[in-house]
Figure 1 (cartoon, helix red, strand yellow):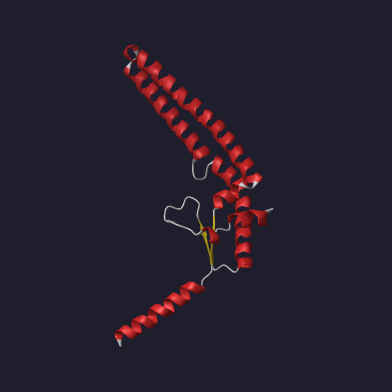
Figure 2 (cartoon, rainbow, N blue to C red):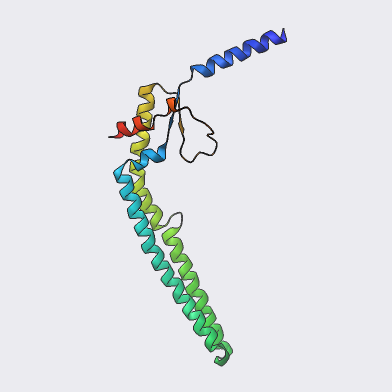
Length: 167
């Protein structure tokens, strides 16, 4: 009796799983096919390089202050040493805050990234959703950078169709 119930449960589960329709899409490939995305990434890279140069300049200033202080430390009075140390620490803190204002979670670069990339993401995800609905898919798996996707059958790969739907 237990064996009969187990076999029936297995058959019902197998039937339910085979009824589900899924497709696989490589979202990275889809994004790279969108010219606006490539332009936005290029602009963000350029902006990040510009910001990094500004941050490096701030930290170079701190390093110069520190090196000058170390060279003159022996000839400075205790109060002058304390004042210089306080100045160096203050400038270092300013440089760190400046870096955070540019590269942090709420920084200028992240804000620009959201401004440039988010509309493209919405458009791509809408195209994937529309294609999935049109193809009758219950599930869409992303094969880009997915360490748990060990194998996918090329017959369920729909990246090119999504790219064409975007155009």
